[in-house]
Image (cartoon, rainbow over all chains, first blue to last red; front, side, top):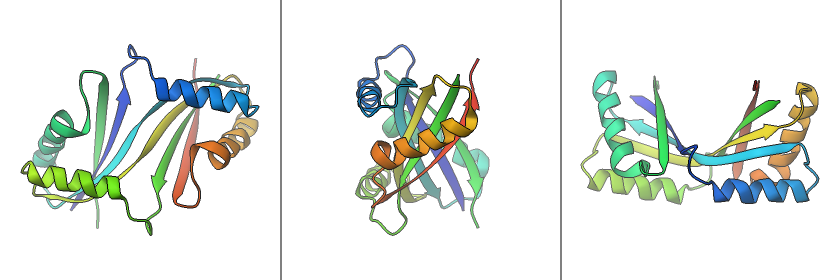
Length: 83
Length: 83
């Protein structure tokens, strides 16, 4: 079995409204040292396969089709074996 | 300047409804090899400080007070210098 860890982040050129809101909240709580905040998604997907090459292709397809909105989001992933 | 990367994940004992929904969607799209899916948040926070020890304490406080709901979520973070 493999585990894919997928990180989906908003593209640098796109305004991250959620991040801006969190930045404002942190400032109002006294965390004045906080600069830019960007928020993304973090997914752990278990895969019932042990073929890393196939899994890589499949995870890429999942990201393109469902997990990330590639118009405004970037994604990256890591595969690791699970015992 | 430092950058904190914060990962907020739902505790293992808590049902991840969003993950379950994504798992169902992936299955219905033909990704039958997909097992458990868990979804969390991924945050990048820039900090205008260079003192790692202080930053560590501050990021921990941010997580406890705002970024994570510690009743149902776990968090972990990494600090790295940014040029």
